[in-house]
Length: 229
Image (cartoon, rainbow, N blue to C red):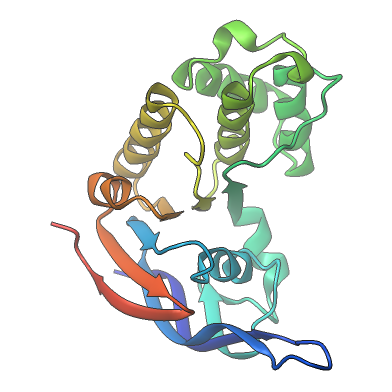
């Protein structure tokens, strides 16, 4: 089985000011995520989860080490990675408030060049799956925070990525909304051959329920990586 993600000796540091030393966010990480896997990254706030996700999503460069995503180097071949991935961040307040839910999702699909007919079909199916069909024509500024977050998760799947990064996608959501999102993620990976999801969380229960394997990260280091069962 091929790896969707490979990290070798990955380090990322941020410069401090004149009175502070550099902050090491990721410290010599080795990590593999297999194609077709639902992989979890579990750790407390500030552990380095979001920094790692941003590097894998080509939004941030490593300070040192080698990282490949879907077989491509994140530094030299980001343009080959980006059309095949997507990323969703929990608590993200995105979307244009004056547009409807459906219009926001359609607009985002066009950034990826998805044909309109296919995009509209996917949007309708996803809105149904995420229990947002009755809000499809509502202005985004009028829907609740939880509904808006579910819309953002739909945005991640509407492009049908080969690899999706979900950074704490259930953060702050109620039990029912969280269950809807987890159920869809699990089904998406299981039913679509070769699709891969990497989810970060600080909820042990969520990692155990969802993931094939889980890596525990703290202070920028991978402490363990194995099946949660």
